[in-house]
Structure formats: structure tokens, C-alpha cells
Length: 301
Ligand code: PSU
Ligand code: MN
Image 1 (cartoon, rainbow, N blue to C red):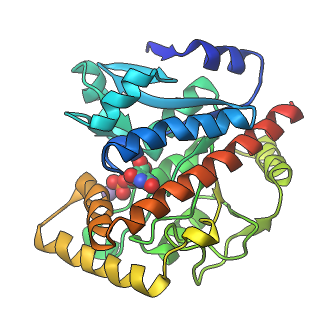
Image 2 (image 1 turned 45 degrees about the horizontal axis):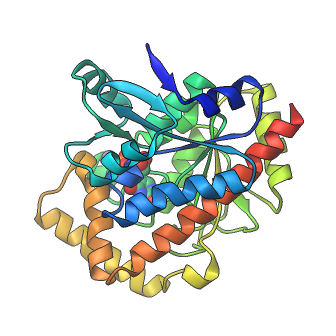
């Protein structure tokens, strides 16, 4: 399979220096234009500032790309005819020569193929509320179970069932490391009622966990980084909003891969853009921490 790796990413990988993978679904399907385009560029800048190389991953006209040019980011941000690509969509997207934005699961697959160990995103997918009847469990959890990539996120999106998501991760052997927190962050809010597996307070200690785990066994690691307090939304307000959004999704008969983008857009509408501001803030926060962890990991090698 041909993978087009941008020169600076390839060089960093060859010399074992820090690289951070970034997903593209968050660009094409997670946020509106033009905020998504600004976000896509700013996360790359933040990662560079910490001394790591950003590698945004997507499929452009049927070719897997690791590290994108600005015009490619812009195309993904405009999202015209861009597929949402998780594991099951690769074959179709590539063989048809289409453009696809990779989800956490899709991005992890490519990151693992090219040897990128740290990945920054907003929030991972997980077990949806009422999954007992809908069977809607994100593919993200399977890739976390199987691939050696550490995913830095603001916890799981609170549109999900956080308790069931944690149980699922436990079954699959995926630890959730809370960065400076004992409680699982819930994306738009900095905390939840659920405990993380372990709490660590430095990027160096997190890098050591990653390295030690992979000496013994394989699989992903979730690094849960709370949204900065000043951007954290009111838990009561956000939980009401989410319930309303889920109700509307049901009425509209939204299913499968449409669910997450629909809910995110609906929540943005219902909060008058507040959720978008929070989403941007937490993504930036995650990019910086991911880069710090990648730098520490590179030092250890
Ligand atoms: N986090 C965000 N915005 C997003 C997503 C995560 O802040 O849009 C995307 C990720 O790409 C994640 C996907 O993998 O939502 C999960 O979709 P699903 O529930 O269909 O698996
Ligand atoms: Mn799903």
C-alpha cells in the first residue's frame, strides 16, 4: 500500500524524534468551516512549539497521506464530499480514489503502520447511550485494544455512556491515565463521577508508562487531559443539552456514522457556539500535552 509521508515527518520518524499524529474527522465532520480550518493549522503550530512534528492523517484522492499541505487541510475543512473513514471504509475510499477524513480508529491504523506512537484528538468515540438496544459502539475502542498508539484526549465525549466506555476499555486492557486528575474528564466538562485507572502529573511519567507497557504487551493507552477550567461548561447545562440533542437525533432517525457529527452540530446550535469554543480549547490543550509526551518518549529511545 502506497503511503505518502510528508518529508519532515519521514525525517523525524527516521531519526526517532518526536511526531504527533492528528486525525481529520474532527476537521471534516466534527466542526464547522472556517473554525475547523483555523483549528487544523493551530494544532500543528502548537505541536511544533513543543519541538515535535505534527502529522495530520487523511486519504486524499485515494492516497493515504501522513502530514498534509495547507490546501489539503482547507479541502478537508470545506468537507465537500469527504467520507468519514474508520477501519471499514478504507477499502472503498482508496479503491474509488475518494477523499476521506480518518476517525480516531482510522488514524490509529495509519499511525501504527508508519510508527507514530502519540496521537492527539478531542475526544475518543465509545459506547453510546442505549447501546444495549442500538449496538452503537465506536470502532475507536477496538483500535485502542489492538494498536500501539497512545491517544491524548479530553476523555470520552459526554454524548456517550462514560461508565460503559470505561468497562469496555478495561476488558480490552486499555488503561486511562488521568493527567493531573483522578476523575475521568467528560470532554466539555473537566470532570465526571468516574475514576481514571491511574493519575500521573507529568508528561515524563506518562511516557514511561507507554514505554513500559509496550515492553510487556501491546495496545493503546488513553491519556485523559481535562479541558482547561476556564472553558469547562456547566455540567447541568451540558447534560440537558446532550439529552435534547439525543432526543432530536432519535426523531430524525439518525444512525451509525452520522450520529456523532449530528450530535456535535446539534449541541453547538443549542449552546449558541459555547460547545465549539470548548471543543477548540480542549483540542489545543491536548495537542500541547501530546507533543510533550512525544518529546519525552523520543528522549527515552
Ligand atoms: N472528537 C472531537 N470531534 C470529533 C470526533 C472526536 O472532538 O468529531 C470524531 C473522532 O474522529 C472519533 C469519531 O473517532 O468522532 C467517533 O465517531 P463514531 O462515534 O461514529 O465512532
Ligand atoms: Mn457508531
